[in-house]
Amino acid sequence: MNFARILCPTDFSEYGNSANWYATLLAETGDAEIIYLHVLFPELLGGSVDEAGAIENDMQRRIKPQNPGIRCSWKVRYGSPAREIVDA
Image (cartoon, rainbow, N blue to C red; front, side):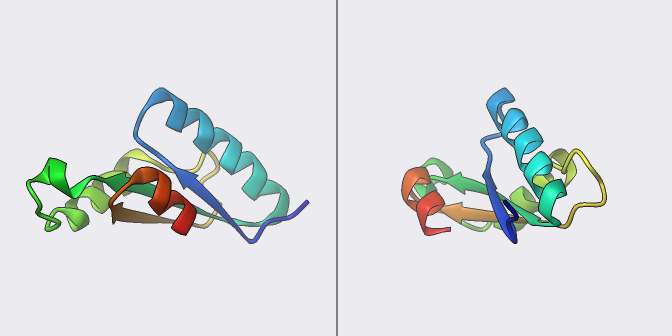
């Protein structure tokens, strides 16, 4: 089965690292792009969403596919993780 895009939600935990490994494996089989997604609760940021760029830059530094030849992008969303992951 080939995929065009693979959504890989992450919370920067060990489980997120395992998900990245599987996403990379799937992407390698079908030349798919991996979309890394991190969801934040705005309430935890004091209602500020100005940090999106900094968080996205941090994601790009910390989370990369296991195979450097795989296309990938990074996204930050705000709200309920369950809802934002399904919407993505």
